[in-house]
Image (cartoon, rainbow, N blue to C red):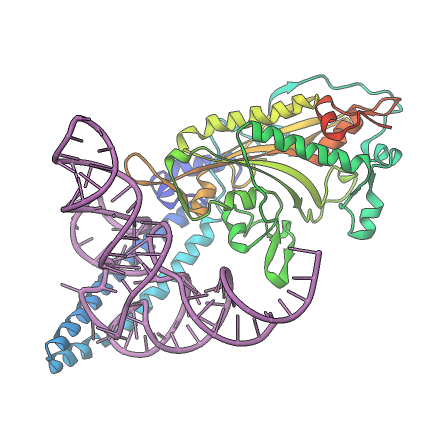
Length: 423
RNA sequence: GGAGAGUUGGCAGAGUGGUCGAAUGCGGCGGUCUUGAAAACCGUUGUCCUUAACCGGACCGGGGGUUCGAAUCCCUCACUCUCCGCCA
């Protein structure tokens, strides 16, 4: 959520930057400013009224103590009206504030000045490409066929037990998943992230904190009977660990990592693009999160990007890094890098990581603050990144590393899998 | 799931419906003393809104109510703890 003060003081710039991400409802900005104006007027009025009422009540108390009952009763008679007026103001204030909040949450984050202008995925800027895309022979198979051929993933079994998008990993397939999780967690710890095992069901407040609610409600599975949501990413519980906290400036940077399953309803997305492991309702991911001092967040974003790339390099997968354009960025992000690996059999790039700086957009809702040098409270900056999402990595390992003999496991994973080949 | 007890400042812990934003202790910060430190002593120490600032206002788990006035009384929700039941 953007800070109202900032919008008020930088109206033109806010509009300009929102336009950069193709945000259409720019009139919201002026509406927010007007509502905030009204809110402050009511505040002033109701404060004055409360001050008067407080003074009267205090006077009555004093008179009662002195035994001047009659005088007290006289003031009491006059004080009767305060209640009603206060109630009226409070009602209007609640209305205005609700309206303001409703409009405020419709405003996405302001893009960083390096974000390219653009409408959609085709306008994303390719920052770099690394490694050589393998040329596969004509008889090369897509990963879903390899999965069946070597009996390591069973999509139909998952459909029986749950539904489409819930694959069952078997034998070496399951073992390889576990190996990747451990590898990613070990690497994250080496990079200074503290491992956490968070809850994977979260309450409403947490969903609001990181911005999944209210706008992405339909994307999460909801356990109605207990009003809990299955996490779409570990970002939610990890970042919410610090909701409503004032951290010490010296504790920065706070670096967390977690492995969790992730659940996404992906309503409405069916067809060729979602075959196999390309898009799932349940998948495994290792996430990294940082809470940092605002002065350092863009530096940190670069180190997170470099870190994610180091994983892809270790796995020896060809990848590219995109700087997302205004039109393709997530609602809450100020700057996002996407990492995509090359799926040799499908001949297309698959997103395996998304690294974002949210600046104060999340921390404003979460109330993650610290006391700066001037003694004033400031909002921390939050960042996160996938490091990494497993299914598409697995897809690329299967496709890119297929040989006549079988599938060659990347060297760094062999200590974790205990085998070199899936055959 | 049943019965009971509780939720107050960073922590511990008081609080008869009327100067209670809240005693006290610990902790934190500043100072005196000291070669330095400890101890002792003195002072200070919440967050938010409004404001250029002063003033003012709000907050004692959340929400609602009673009252001229609520941390204190009532209702409601959430959470925590204890006992019983069930259970990986």
